[in-house]
Image (cartoon, rainbow, N blue to C red):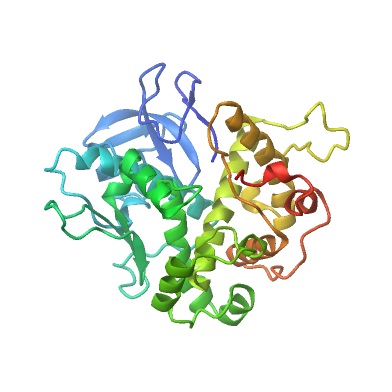
Length: 379
């Protein structure tokens, strides 16, 4: 994610801001330019962007609910932006608690779409393609006690997110109950979109054999695999080949989990670049913990370039979190097997045939090989 500034006063603003906290100007995001701009009203939902004052632009219709700050696509009078046009079902806004929950979901979804657009991935609506189009439904649990619970998941292009996940306390309860080291709304979106792109890029993109060679045979009965996972758990050596325990349940889940982690890493590294951060510990005599990202992570040449930059930063950030008594920012181990899978995702999203390369012999090997055990999840 980039950092942005207000064109009116120069104040740094965040991707989620709808107005500048210093000068009060309304803000809007221009996805085609990956820019945030201060805007001024022209009437009837037409706005003048201060970074392109000759233009007249429309805000997404969902701006009126406080869930979107994006312009509609350039040169159109569409009602919805590139992210909101995929919504099939939104929460019942006559229920007061549903609006803030929807706002939290949309904040995460728009961050997802930032990455998808940066990666130039195909985004087709169900109007354009009823069979393979992407849609979202945000559903609340039944109000009656003991009623059915909404399950977050993906089915043939439709991504369902349980509204209950927007409640921090409930999401944390589920994280603990499931024994997960990480559970966020953004993580849900990145995981579920991985299932969608398995359909689009792997199954329908002619990469099924290559994907099976990397992640395993997806024709294995999915329901039976999940039952076995929840009954028997994971093998003791799961970290050698899987980025998370859940990834070991079935090849589809392995792909989706690896996909999500690829975006986790790439997007976080972009913020590192935007913030001008560098890592150079004084106690590091080898220089292996020093890093300064000088490339665009969304346009990286290889997964080795990404991982070699990522590991010094995540080592530093995990230690900063521990200094605050918080959980590790990134409580995962990147083994050589996992890096190869990340390489497959990198090759897939950039349409490159480099997924089979071995990880480089570098800091990555030292960290993931256990020579530096504090990089592993404690306990």
